[in-house]
Image (cartoon, rainbow, N blue to C red; front, side):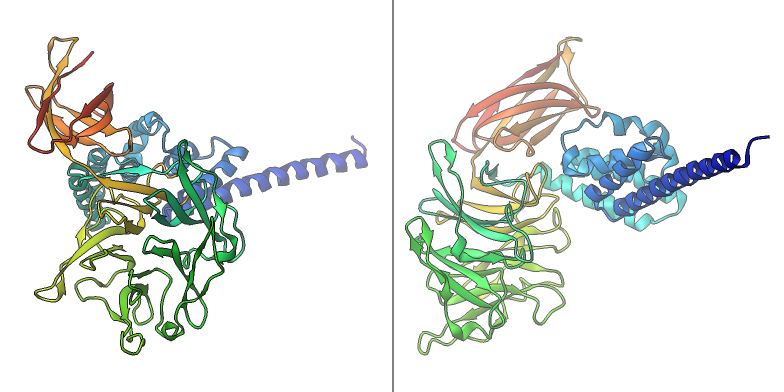
Length: 507
């Protein structure tokens, strides 16, 4: 018989091991459940963090590998990861998990592979309908992805470019302002900020080797994300900003060398107008347009005019019944001739969360037209805000948290382009025949997430419209697999009447 002390120690050790294992089991279960909860709330990076915690304890815990792959592919760190693994789960989870095709559709949508997203959501709808669950919701997903496909198959006549470092960073960049012939840039960023007001204003200019090192304009102060908004008017560098003083007021600053003077109040008489941070002021400084939630459940666009006789500002009034909706309207911008309004809205029927819309003023009827969605590639399945046009009204900039953004929001530059028609045939070199039942995509190197596509018909022919002066990465895709990638250049600014013929071959 073992001595009592030895037995006691043995029992205590066994209990300690049991409690330790029980504690670990509890911890992995809690992390896993938190991951599932975050996944259901579409907080994918947070879900991924919890799943990684679980994997550190037990990498084979339940269906952790599957759920962690979903969270990874729906987080920024998985944007360029191969889909081979998630597709390999189809043989098992495609039948056992009612939401496999839902997640697959979300992954395809995040990657702007809209045709594939439509197919995945259709399978999800069929599976849910068969089970008798949430059929209406799944049908809405099919309809929305089909609408996205229409947008993506008919891109508008704009090309966009994501600004390089040091402008865009792993943080958020907001409210960009170009001036001095588009060679100088001001913007807000939280790259060094902390506390309640993490955003500061930064300045840079374009040099022979790209954007020069940025400088913080410290005397302009710091801002919350909601209040980070600046405007420069008359191209002379006069800068307007918003501060939450006296219920909300405009301040302005004058350029001084490579910096700006300490802001002073613009006009004390507008401090009682319930001005909000996302404002626009015209070059005559007598019309202010802004988004406010003062009298509504969401954001609506209001405007106020200054009376030239007495200098007083009118009581803010809703901009137009055709502009405001039951949803949010934000970030207004008015063209110099004051006949074109651009703004962001999360109303239904768009591409993503917040989209950019445009409305035109009709002087004969004193009314604004129904807003039009500016389409892809200005808008994306993500959010677009702070849209502004340059003086030429053919180029401008906005911010977006779209696919491949470096941080939360990045600054994008856009400009109008001419398109030309291109057509040809695709040959299968192995069989010596035309390739059929496939798709061709032309991706401009300026912005590889955009593409111009065409189905390849039964005779191997394709036809589409592409940017007339650009270098492309051409992809031939069949059954979700890329059969060929090839570089292709075209330099033609003659416009739509021109048709180019280009054949491709696939081994």
